Amino acid sequence: MSTRNQKVAIVTGASQGIGAALVEGYRKLGYAVVATSRTITSADDADVLTVRGDIADPVTAERVVDAAVKQFGRIDAVVNNAGVFVAKPFTDYTAEDYVSVTGVNVASFFHLTQQAVPHLLAQGGGHIVSITTSLVDNADSRVPSVLASLTKGGLQSATKSLAIEYATRGIRVNAVSPGTIKTPMHPAETREFLAALHPVGRMGEVSDIVDAVLYLETAPFVTGEILHVDGGMSAGH
Image (tube, rainbow, N blue to C red):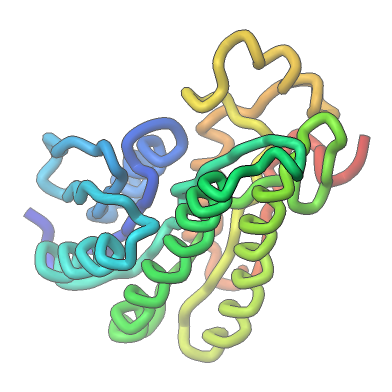
């Protein structure tokens, strides 16, 4: 069972891929973790509390924050990892696509972060980090993705805005902007095409993103940073 001095991180989209690896990464840093997703199952680790729910729903955000405080007594880090990516030509997006992508990518960030900030302030500060996408800075005609840019681009701007708003109060706010990472989201038959989108000629590994998040977690002088971990995509082609 956690002691009340142990730091606590919330990780969204935590059931697979980058999210599941982030839970492990924060545990290795010694944090207790509240892990949430729609399909998450209970953990064997007493210092990992799982909360099932749709993070786009403000009620889920409230439940996750309440669970963290009730179980572990504090919140020190919020990792907004949950994300939906739908690549379609602009006029092919449906009303349902719009609701789904804005809900998971934007509403979840807004509600969870807003609920958590008072608890970070109560600890004298903390860290908020979001996962965006390199396509925000580097649109690619081969991957039409306006909804990703609309939503994740908003996250990047909000990251800078929040970093400045809370800079004197001990809360740091950063983002990691990945290229395409080998996760269950990308079927094997698409990987050759996806690898070729990167100047380095390969996809990223989940560990690349976890390492970037944990670097930001432990970098006290870094705030308002969008850290590109994208095999050179944001630099050019």
